[in-house]
Image (cartoon, rainbow, N blue to C red):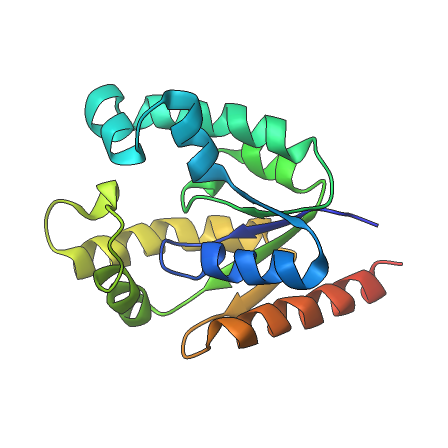
Length: 175
């Protein structure tokens, strides 16, 4: 049985909040890739993007994903762009990959209500940026996913319950 559960999806889809509750319910450790990247870099992600560039951030993401994917019994909340490098997905596939999705409108509302700085949304029209990034990334998320859950309109408790139900179904079909 695969012991890691990797949550992928766009910013605002519920990976961190859902991951926190899921880890608690399943007795697993929550690992947030973006937090580990910040620790490794010694600075927040917006500063990495601004001072070192996105390519430097993606290199750190690959390095941290490699390290985390080698551990067991974790819920891994991934950054929204983890799917941009196939090597990350290959490593995360040692576990079960759950794609949390939401409509662009829901994502925009969640991002606007969140105090986090989102480097890829800092400039220009946020709604347009979300739509364009989603259009590009959605096929990558879908291809990587073992399980897909739309979090639009769901509270975090329901998201965790649906992930657990999806895991039970997935494990039942892969015996």
